[in-house]
Length: 98
Image (cartoon, rainbow, N blue to C red; front, side, top):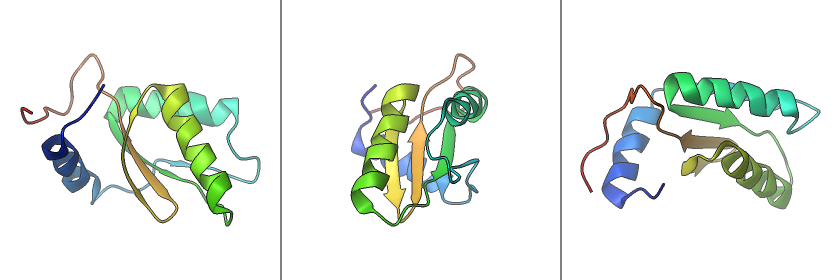
């Protein structure tokens, strides 16, 4: 799914007030974390994931893996927080037209 700039801006506005739903621990990206991310995306569509890592390359690789494994779209990265979106069957969030 590709989002237009207008749609990304809209999602960034919605994500601003959100708290991170998923937070990676010492074990990093595990199957359990991916499963919880799937559940959160199915329920909320737009979530924040906290990736605490001091190594920029490692953090980027983890964020890319989350986006790839969940078939979601990266909306924004601010510091250690990744904002991702994936439309669910219920279509909780209605995006503006492109």
